[in-house]
Image: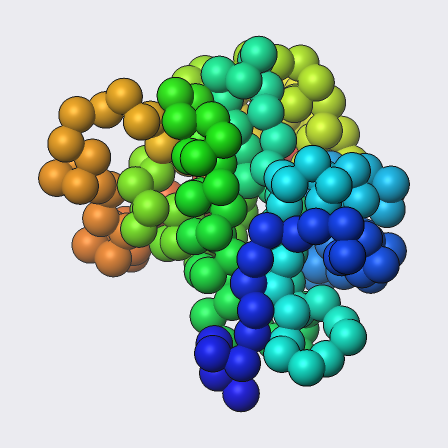
Length: 216
């Protein structure tokens, strides 16, 4: 199989049958990473599909999902997050995560052209995808101050770090795309150029915070 063997599209009513499988894979993926994402129930995922606010990937000719992502808005639509990006384990070799993320980015820009797009992640792979779209690493203070967003982190095993640092630090890295920035192509953050340096910084942050809050 390759990327051409998948359909990646905005999810619709016909895809709500995959909602339970999507939720299960979100939970399993979070456990495997040793972190957590905001837990969602099937009804919430169905709602996103019916609203046209999610992307689903399906292997052609098969009745099962391969990957998924949805968008959420915060701060009265001033901020948009592409959340819950997952790819089923058997489909993780074909570039689906990048394709899903690209489609979610396009959908977000179409629906909310003036909003800032942001995300939190511990994944270097996701950081690479984000950087190619124009996201840059930022401090948490540059992200939304919407309390409902930060409450979504409560299901993460590292939530105590976030709360005890007053939302200033955690093992996640914040990334932001600002559509108002001039010459975004020229000012892209070069992930490849900074990979080794950034990986070292992540390791240092993880070691310091983990030891500080007894996460070893």
